[in-house]
Image 1 (cartoon, helix red, strand yellow):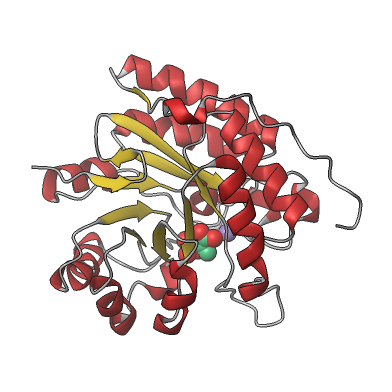
Image 2 (cartoon, helix red, strand yellow; image 1 turned 60 degrees about the vertical axis):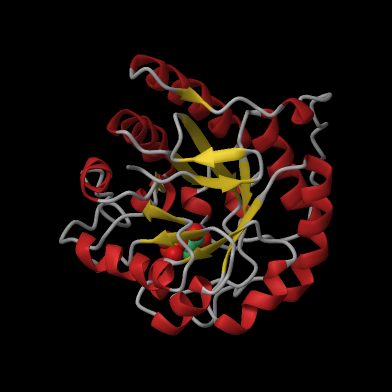
Length: 280
Ligand code: PEP
Ligand code: MN
């Protein structure tokens, strides 16, 4: 029996496909608002955005942290969409509780058992990314750490693993999708953004993920990818995101599924795009 995880008006792991999208990092009000409005207008279901980033280089942008709280609160209110953000330290849980509808465990934290145990004590869904060095059995054991504490609302996320191949940022292991469907009761979403690291590969892999039976996607979108403070090369523009949504929709139809419809209360006048001011 497969589990379904409720997030706001959605059931992840149900028959309908869910798309989670937003910038890698929340950078400013204008950037997050503009991204989120276009995600919603194209039919995206849940917003994403990092406040505390886990970067390989300590000199690179580490996220706005606390400063981004007000931005996220405002944009959530304006769009009505749920929000997911990464938690990398149990100490961040209390603070992020107010804005996060789902906590994300990043690839670098999958082995952090004290973080997993603490998330097991929460009553909020968790997206558990596969460590880039983890076998599927280790990934499922990490999920068990969360479930062991009584929190069964775990959504797995395949985000690519390290292999000898370096042409792509990671090797997206799409065979994990049907494997998880056959060996676990947990829903699984696919992140082709980190999985490939290359903008032009994201739409083809998103379509493949939908065809392979994934429950949804996790995608990075930025209004000006060349100016992004993190992961610009893999950020979709709002137009790329719109194109991806329309082509994923066709693949879903071919496999007798569909995008989750927008809840009635979200169907008000489409949000107007905000102009980005240079330097903001
Ligand atoms: C992210 O989703 O922004 C992220 C840091 O992902 P990962 O942990 O998969 O690298
Ligand atoms: Mn990223």
